[in-house]
Length: 290
Image 1 (tube, rainbow, N blue to C red):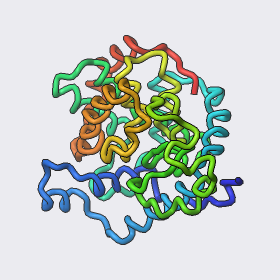
Image 2 (image 1 turned 90 degrees about the vertical axis):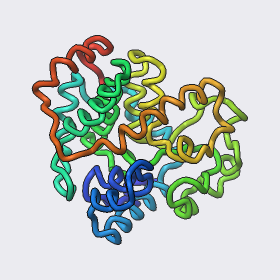
Image 3 (image 1 turned 45 degrees about the vertical axis):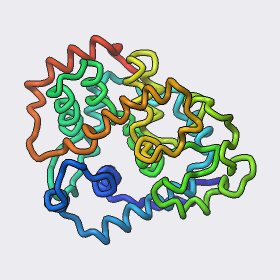
């Protein structure tokens, strides 16, 4: 399938999906009045933009598409960078249309990680918050946003009706393919998520880059932080083994920090940088292959 022919850019910027996440998964501790005040969008425009994003995403995220993207990007031959160079690279994706704040990607990452740090979590958890979105550099390698951000889900088996906008899967070739459209598809009961292919995006990409360096809970957070149909709806437990269920408690613990720490106070990145330089150096090599 030629996905380029199907692609029209449905997002104005890379943060459209994340802003929509806050609308779909509001902070349970925040009153409806506060939530309404925090995100002041023209609802119909936002909804239609994100709906079009998922129409294209669900049409094109097939098992074969994921295999092709793994073959293309998991050679890690696009660019060699330090974490700091990757963040600078990512900062070309500053969101100019957010109505509430004007933060570059570094500041968003710092808000997530500093909230984790303030709650006294281990340094690897803080580091995970700091780097969890670095896989979005895929956009700067020419990937369309529907293949970078968005809720992730397994491919190679039946699409859950709990995935956002499930009606759009009817246009996905795998939807009618008997090899892929049964409950287990190409998998077996409780085979473990490590044996399951997820829709292609920044989560899986960054996980593959970092899988030899970070503690296992950190890797689960990075790999599955966009897998909302499982960590919010518990839809794919039949594919998970006991290790997955244990590790997903960390994914659930991380989720509120990712969604609800975006606020208008800019972190002092220069003052904070020495601390982050130390934990980056503790866990990661000087240069990574992207």
